[in-house]
Image 1 (cartoon, one colour):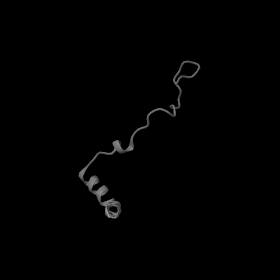
Image 2: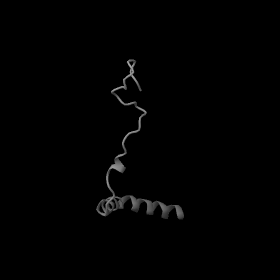
Image 3: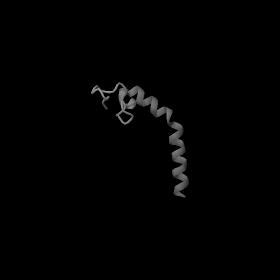
Image 4: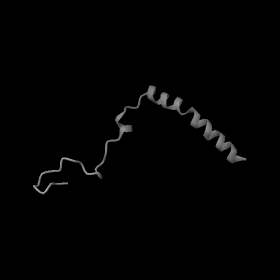
Amino acid sequence: MQEPNGQPSAQPSPRAPQPNQILAVPATVALCNSDYNAAADVRQTMAQQDAKAAR
């Protein structure tokens, strides 16, 4: 967006793309293992829900 004087606005448009924090962090084996281990409770809950739905 431009100001009336023809210069670009100092503030970005609210509709402008924002940086993606997920893509900003490199995927390493250690980080993937950490994410996997942190989600153990989620996997357990999903397994219980799947078993209940299969009945």
